[in-house]
Image (cartoon, rainbow, N blue to C red; front, side, top):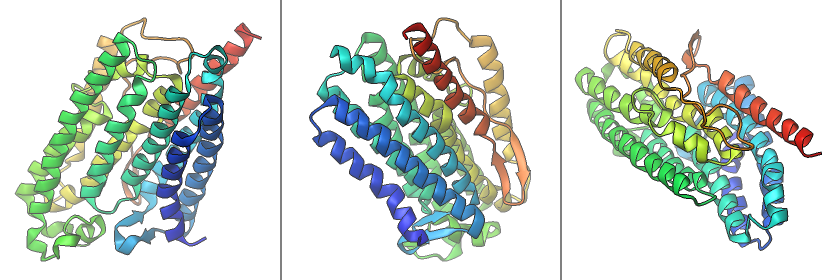
Length: 354
């Protein structure tokens, strides 16, 4: 299948499914669509990622959509976590549908936001324009915030507002960093529409203004690091994980935090080349080390709920690996843990309630 068709399908299919969810009248129908549609979209993401890793990059929309090895690697993880979480949603909400706790309006809201968040996360990975990538991150913040409070309680509302406020401040920092990055590219002589295209910037990264790139990277690291849960900007994590439904918490742990970290990785080669390869990636490593220390010091027991995918304490950032494509994060342990833990939780639930 043509690469451009696959890229457009990744973005349009979840938006179509979100619209169908909003139109359905029965919560059972919504959950069936979430499970089946989410699994199908996960398979599509995996096939697309495999094609990129086997045959090379995909480009569509006159270069505005671009999928290379780094983004395909993360797309495969997104497909795995999104597909497995969608299937698990049927069992997780099944008892609530039977008891009437999950009404049709709540189910429609969950389904629409669930697929909308999938489309936004896919946009983060496929957008070649760094400004549109920022828009995708902001969209994930707005859409996933209301998934935290599917069941409206005082604690879930508090977690939702904390997540919105903290992450919105971080995304605002990332916006300033994006503007500074565009300012550093003015001397490349690019047309305005190509000023933030990553592929165009990567053609001549050494000609970017070093001073502006240093400042841009600091703002981007703080901004996207807030969404990725890097210490000391991870205060929203425990509340959001403990109050979100299990499929949403699995998506947070398994991919969404890594999607924000992916944005930092996307800019890192540019700032390294512009500043003479002075090791700016060490700032990310330092943030990960602080996160690990704070996770050990601030881990609080009791942040569990029935059916949640395990421990909701602040998570540590993935390690690093040098690869021929550059420096890559390794989020696959987090994804495996998220999928494995909530699957084990479903088995335990079946044993308790045969």
